[in-house]
Amino acid sequence: MKDVLIIGAGPGGLSAGMLLASMGYKVKIFEKQVYLGGRNSQINLENYSFDMGPTFFIMKSILEEIFEKTDRKLEDYVKLTEINPMYRLIFGDGKSFNPWSSNHKEEMITEIEKKFPGESSGYLSYLKREEIKCKKLTPCLQVPYSSWTDFLKLRFLKALPYLDAHISLYSALERYFKDEMLKLAFTFQAKYIGMSPWEAPGTFSIISYLEHSDGIYHVEGGLNKLSHAMADVIKEQGGDIKLSSPVEEIIFEGKKAVGIKLNDGKIIKGDHIIMNADFAKGMSKLFPDNLRKKYSDSNLYKKKYSCSTFMLYLGIDKIYSDIPHHNIVFAKDYRSNIDDITQSKVLSDDFSFYVQNASVSDSTLAPKGKSTLYILVPVPNNKSNIDWEEKKRYFRNKVINDLETKGGFEGLSNHIEVEKIITPKDWEEEKDVFLGATFNLGHQVSQMLIFRPHNKLEGYKNLYLVGGGTHPGSGLPTIYESGRITADLINQEE
Image 1 (cartoon, rainbow, N blue to C red):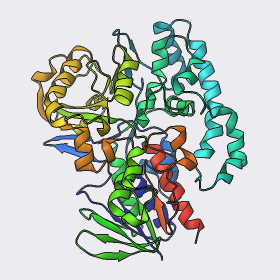
Image 2 (tube, rainbow, N blue to C red):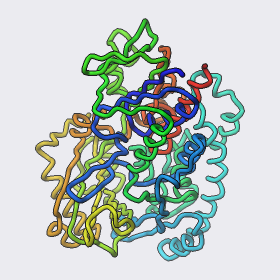
Image 3 (cartoon, rainbow, N blue to C red):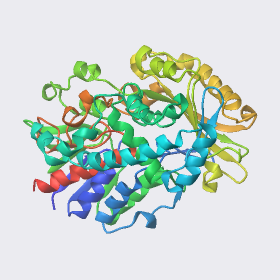
Image 4 (tube, rainbow, N blue to C red):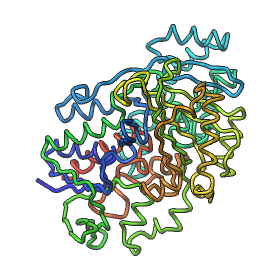
C-alpha cells in the first residue's frame, strides 16, 4: 500500500481520498481547521445550523458516480430533495420569475409565457442546442490537460464548434432570448464561478443548462453533510483524517515532493502529495521560495481572480413560509453592479444578493417555529483595499434593509436571534482564501484547461492539485471532478 498525503479536507481532497482509498492506497488527510469540508462545511450558531458555502447541489451525478466507484450509494448517506421551482428571481423593477427544471417543462413554459410572452420558443431552442453542447464539452472537462497535444485529441476537436470561448456568456444566451431580464435569468449563473456574464466565456452556458436539465437539490441538514458522508467513506476504507493538523510546508528532494511537515514539527513521508489548499495561498505558504519561481508572490498576485462574497447568517424566531427556498434579488442596474465588483472594485449602493430560506424545506436546521437565513452578496475581492472593519456594520445594515424592502422579509430586523458575518477580509485571514476570492482563480480563457495549474502540478514530481484552483475549475461538481481526475492520474502512473 502506497501512502497518499492530502493537505486539506475540502471537497476536492475528500473526493480524491475516497477514490484512492478504494483503489488500495493508504490515504491520510491533514486539515488545518477543527472542522472538515473547507468552504463546504457547517456553521453552528446556538441551535441554528448553516452551510458556510455552497447551497445549490447540481450535477449530483458526478458525486453519485464517485460513490459508485467505492461500491456505495450516495442516497445511503444523505437525504436529497429536489427544489422546484428552482428559485425565485426578483429583477430590478420588482418583477419576479420562478424557473422550473426541464423535467417540469410544461410548468416552465407556462411561467415564461406568463412573464415573457412569446419567449418560450427560445427556451426550447436553448434546451436543444445546449444539450448537444453539454454532451460535447463534458468529456473535455473529465480529463487532465498536461500537454498541448491534448487539444488534438478527438474529444476536443468534436467539441470545438460548440466551445463558444470567443464570445461572452451573455452573448451566447442572446441567441435564444430577446428580453433583457430573461437573459439575466440564464446568465446570472456566472456568479457561481465569481465572474461577470459579460466577461465569462460563452462555454459556461452549460452551467445554467445543467442546472435546468439535472435540477437543483437540497441535502437535509445542509450541503455540508456531503463532506461528512465522503469522510465517512474514507474512514470505512481505512483512511485517516486528522483535524486541527496544519501543514507548515511540503518537503522536497530537489523538485520531488516526498512528505509534509506539520506545525508541531513532525515530518510525515508519503509516495504522493495532494494539495487541496486554496491554490495561491498554498503556493505562497507551503512551498520553499526557491522552488516556485513561476508562482512567486508577484506572479500569483498578477493573476486574475474571482470576486469575493459578503456573508450574513441569521437565526430568526419565525418562518417566512411564503418565501421560497432559493431567492436571487437583482440590482436595478445589474451590469453596473457587476462592473463595480469586477472592474472598479467598489461597493455598489444598489447591489444584488442571494437568500437561502432553507427552513421552508428542511425543519432540521432550526428550532421548531424558527428558521435560518443565509445571505450572500457578491462584492469585490481584496484587491479593492476596502476597509471591511470600517464598512462591515454599515453594509450589514444595508443588506438587512434590502432584505426587508426588496426580498419580502418584512420586519426581519425585529426577529433576529443570532447572526454571523463573514467579510472578504475574514475569508482571507481566517479561511486562507487568497485575496478573499471565494471562487478562486478566474475562469477566463487564459486561465482554463492547459493554462490553469495542472492536476499534476507542472515542474514538480509526486505533487498533485485538487480544488477550484486547478482544472476543471471552481464550483462543487467540478471540484469533485478534480478529485476524480487526480486520483486517476496517480493510479495510472503506478
